[in-house]
Length: 188
Length: 227
Image 1 (cartoon, each protein chain N blue to C red):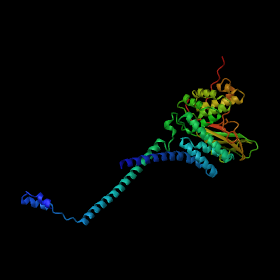
Image 2 (image 1 turned 90 degrees about the horizontal axis):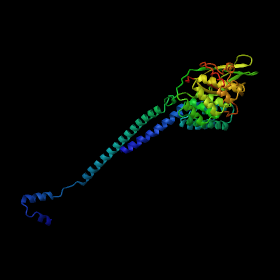
Image 3 (image 1 turned 120 degrees about the vertical axis):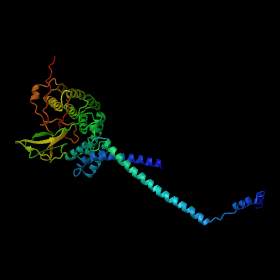
Image 4 (image 1 turned 60 degrees about the vertical axis):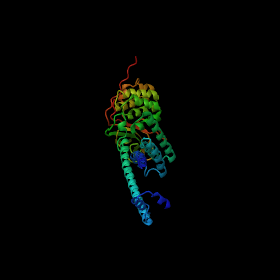
């Protein structure tokens, strides 16, 4: 204080009064100050949580939207629900009508004959042949263009190939299948 | 914040796109086919076929031939182990066929498997694709398989199929295949039969087609007289 008094030496009365006012300690309410600081911190914390929640919601919403867009793009690119080979394959796409294929078998002594193959899920009873004379059995089956393998099933248990048809090279189960190929609209 | 957002978005897009691809291929293509096993295959067999089918579908190959082979085995009373050997064999051959032919229809791949099993080589299939651009190969591959099964050398059979396919539509090509088979069954040497040098007109006129329907197929050209 003595040094302060020394500092004001040479000042006029008004200046000394001003200096004295400036040097008067300010009364600080520390409780109120702390309260204001904590209130500000809580406001910031609350805002931050809300902001982050909003940000997370935006990320989630955008992600879902982006995922949906990606799903659509991927579905279109891989041809979902559409003939996948059509756009990329240079060959003509065949949409042929069904052709009626007649299967016949001469089987003396048979009481029933069916045909099972790749066209009926190899179901040995789904496609019976009808007897058209004493020993000859036949069935007319509509098939689309393609290659099918089959065998006749005599009396529900005896599998035999079609002696009139080409043979399939595969015999994974010990019996040679027959082949029928139905032409589409292949070009010459 | 922005970088985390972008990372999340990209990762989500990748996962969803992959899931959609897998789900679509395995689902749309395979589920319907695999459902045919319900009530016919044991739970164990269906699980094994489904496992192979998933791999096949993920490779972009058709599932139906696998299910078809399994159904064939079931109907013929084969045990599960034997069926799975056959199913895996088909799966393997489908992959070979796809690599040889490139982009192909499901029917083409199934026919190509038959050609491979008959004895054609993958390069032979590739040649067929290159020699017959823009043509569905189901019938050419099927005729090729039949010729080889009947005893024709694979390379010669490919040459013969290509030559005939360039001049005939599918019905005509099928008629050619039937006439060759008829000649071979009548005692003509396979190599001779596919080149048509012994394809006597009377043999063609007496040949009875194995099926009816479809377009009327022109008969193969008569053999040229030897000089």
